[in-house]
Length: 175
Image (tube, rainbow, N blue to C red; front, side, top):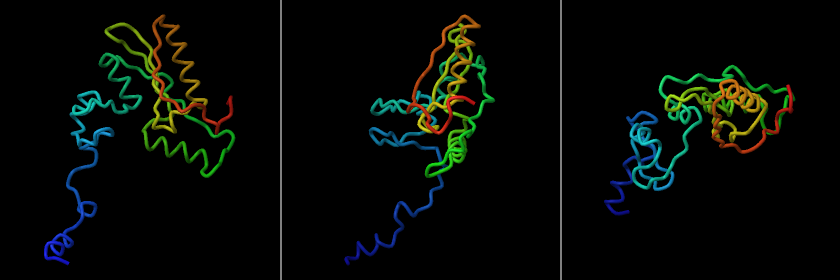
């Protein structure tokens, strides 16, 4: 072993060194791998300034950024999924829901809101792929219907941003 190898072998590797930088301050572009300041990336609407790659935006962030400031009101925010079938595969469905809720901060995969867009009333919804692949269960269906009914009531457009992996097989059709 050369003297250079001995010196470098004693220094901690990058994976063992402790970082003084708080979690979430930096984000790596999933396309070009450029390390980006998270606040700057947010101001740039989650588009990498180096390669113009559009990164995923969660459902709530998308809707809040779309609608006029201080005009939003969530639709059916109280709805939560139920494990009516007591479904279990490798993991209990109830545990999968709890895990997804903790991971995303959402109760289910769809966020629906009323608000204004350039001072015009609008109803919007967006699915959150981070919540069980954006899969559609009974709560997603109920929120979608309530959002559509609200748009009819207000006589305004209804726009839905879909990022769904399809139907959620762990739930019954009705509850």
